[in-house]
Length: 352
Ligand code: NAP
Image (cartoon, rainbow, N blue to C red; front, side, top):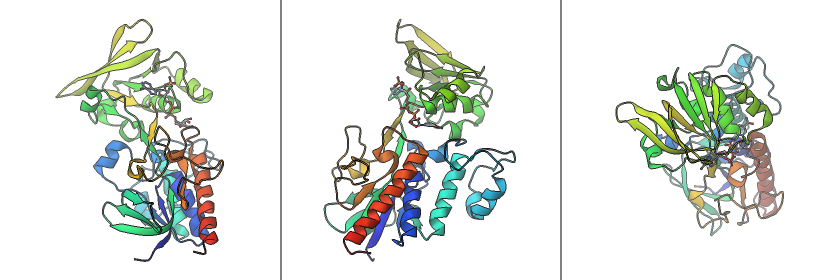
């Protein structure tokens, strides 16, 4: 098999943006978008990244709310549209899944080759680099862009594990409309943008949403927290940590037990669901020992405002190297930077 110029691992905003730039620069990138497996679903690492698990995206520049229906139907291929949630008739802001399909299509339009498979390991100790996939064997590449993003965290309680998929979820958009949550009280844990966004979203289905947060103020942006706090269906439960998830074999989760961290009192909240929105862990397990990572597992950029990693010829973009901004638009921006850095690297070494 010929050595690739550039392999991109990851299919969120960073991966597709890198692919669009690399393809337009004639590098002929090969992108691994991840496999559609139950394991990836459980871990929150399905193709198209975290944005594919969110609702409307109001803050991605260039996508104001409007009548996107006709545009989407003509921009995205029919076979992909079938796999997407139905496109609303009413004018709306672009949704995460729509935005990701548009990026994927845009990268494909410029000739990006896409393989639906997981990368399980890389060997960056020699050149060309070696990329090993779960189903499709190994590939060699002169340059590599890692854009594998991050996945949702869980609290780590054994009882939480026991009720995963039977009431416990880390993806409101994936699971919120399930019958078990309709017109029933549910709990959302966390105080960031994800928590208030999910609480607001879930309030469409649930009879009541308890927003359990360990402090007395939210971390979320003012506009989003106001929206949640003004919502009559949402009740904040301040200074509280989940102690245990209680349920029955037959019905799944029935109660979320929380402890008030100020007075240590216990409260049992009756609920059919608990949605976690307590931050993320970068998807870098397959890189262990190959690239310099931070204590939290994020890929280190070795130079300010460059996507250079600890190995020359390997670049990283998006949430996998960003524990601070973590926005779709910043991921896209760094994806573009990584492609430009890869192009310059390949050109400097006479490869293209
Ligand atoms: P985040 O901002 O890191 O917030 C995590 C929340 O979970 C915090 O409130 C934190 O509490 C709480 N938490 C963490 N560990 C916990 C634990 N073990 N037990 C209980 N609570 C715990 O994460 P995020 O909300 O997922 O947001 C990540 C990034 O994505 C942010 O930059 C955010 O702005 C962005 N985002 C943007 C949008 C949007 O603009 N539409 C939507 C979603 C996310 P403390 O506050 O006490 O630390």
